[in-house]
Length: 337
Image (tube, rainbow, N blue to C red; front, side):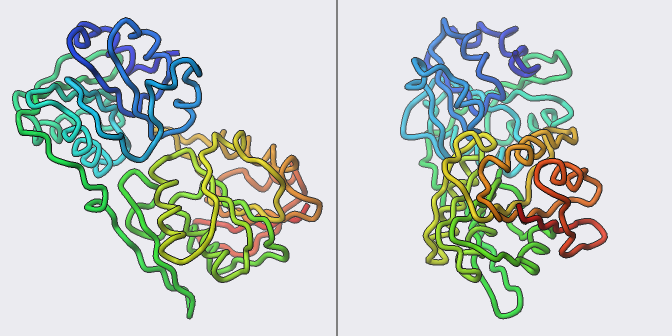
């Protein structure tokens, strides 16, 4: 099914008649089928959409934190949640565009597409709104400056995390959860982390990898797997592990679909926001599937907003969890199978 922003692109399909185009972070794979008569490639930083691309078409798509060297006549960026992420994507796009190439931005107005148009106008000439439909906006600009190489390192923001005498360095990028700071929920988990068996540990929805790296460094976690759908998060998780001299396996996974093996412990600060709506379907599915990856006596350590219905879901999947620690906003739940 086409998302509303993709429907706006289909309405304006003549935009793609000339030259080679790149779509960045399309929220649906169907747009590539709809525009298959044009020379279009896909750059994906979110694994579920990339995974939904038919195998026969995968060679025209890239799942990564950064697109490899290439040249395009036009690039469309789907509006991300964070303006800093948009700025980084624009910098990447301008490195790939021919001089005089077209740079476009499309997105839902509720997700900030209108303000994104203002950002786009700061980086392109003759920026204007090409279309507005289905509560979305499509902006077009011309990149007249010569291509400038994109340096990912310029966007790093390293965070020194200290709890008592323990400390690690976390590397973050725009577009990664809690960019540039340690979020309060994860801090609560680190302060109160307690596991009996850490031979095989999964850090689910790992973000920049702080939980998995912390457990490896200070709780003797021996074989750590860190999973996420976000290519930027996976890159940062690997960087965080390297900075702290920790060995860990980083896996792109849609929920638990790409996770192999069984674990003595699963730790997580799971996501629950999708777009502008509250949505915890991903976490609910994750909890339902926990019995399939937890070893006998396997442990779950999960931190979440107190209003979310995770205790009931955990009780149905495994057993009633204990609350190890809490603040006025978050609870840290523990359960052993």
